[in-house]
Image 1 (cartoon, rainbow, N blue to C red):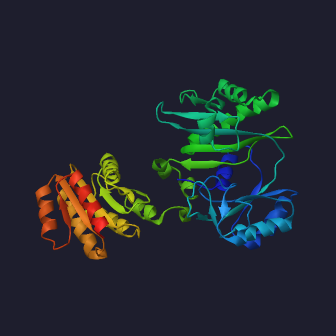
Image 2: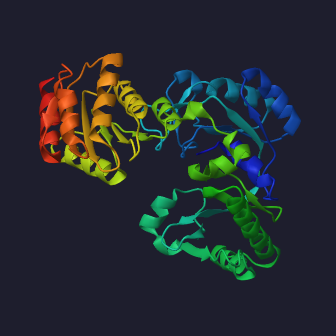
Image 3: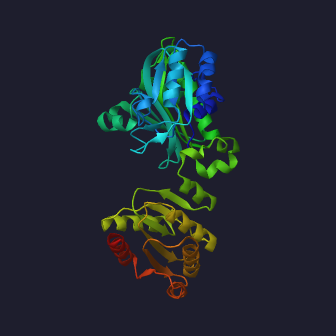
Length: 398
């Protein structure tokens, strides 16, 4: 689960992390009061969307101006102007894709006197099963670009969960960033604060880009991007309350209500599969035969008729779907349950696109019989390769 920058900074501030003062703005009328509260003389007006590259992004609407999604204001009138231009307009960045995202929240923040910019992040290293820090002198840039062009400028290290952050971790960061004296001490304190926030709040990723040194000799987190481990949200009600569902795909939200693993994609063939590995294989073979999957959807090993019905509804709700492939290998999951769920869903929502069903495993004969006797226009397949060819052929004919 992702949260907005202003929310991330509020969370980090509770752990003592140095951040700038700021005020979230949800209405144009609140801009002046927010600017006066901060006092100036320099303000930064930031678009709040769940995507990076905001500063270099462009608004679709001409009325939003040409200055991107992060703007520097030198007067209260300029703050008000920027807020009016940016709020409720669509921002397109390298991470949003051409569709962009509507900006429904802004964050007005104190301007900072920047001396240097760095990059610092923490994430879960699946290889070592530890929290790892990534540090670079190249702040304000996409870390992927740095990794590609100048990988020697990236330093990483992991923290032993048995000891937590130790003094040598702070020294490693200070050395990597070329910090000495009081700034080196601040770096050591900051690493400890970030690690504590990361572990306590069950984060999966924490990115500070840029981490800056001000001309006053202070380290400050000028931006903050935080993601939480969705599997741990049951014990993080405070963090769960920060969720902004307007930033998420409506179909993915609906899927989560039924414990379905669903990810929307850009293709035209909807997939309903049981098991993540089989789902990946299904998407791969669809691509092999020249089409693109519209989603990843794993109904799980213990899906009920109701969950299968919900899954089918979610797939058909996607206007891009031109055909549906149901691929079930019944181990724990019974093929007859899948068949009943598909039939119930089709009868409830209708079937306007070709549907190919491949069943194998527990109660497969019963499942095929249920579908065959349903009177529905369903194409049966013998194996995965046969199913993929049939759905691709059917979609092309449509």
